[in-house]
Length: 134
Image (cartoon, rainbow, N blue to C red):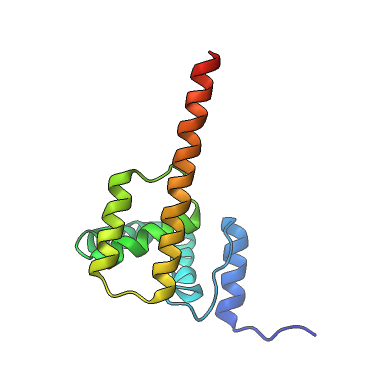
């Protein structure tokens, strides 16, 4: 039996396939509807998309909670492929302590920080091994 989907959601799935990105969950703040808005701007109005992203970047600079959420969004999309530096991890930790987040966000950020530290440790160990054998 075929699922009944809203017309915008069908278009959203088509845009996701066209842009080669994975769809986001519905019901999550900043989920499918916001992603659909971004993708439709990107495809149908590239100039509008550029100005939207500039405004978003400007707003994020002055909102600490938005900085963390933007970083999580970039990590989720795979935009950031380099590990975070210690100063960035400390900045995120301070922002989390200052901001009022739900437990799930704090847990996901704690997991992110732990994974980043583990990755950086593995990379440092790998560099040492290469230097020993070189």
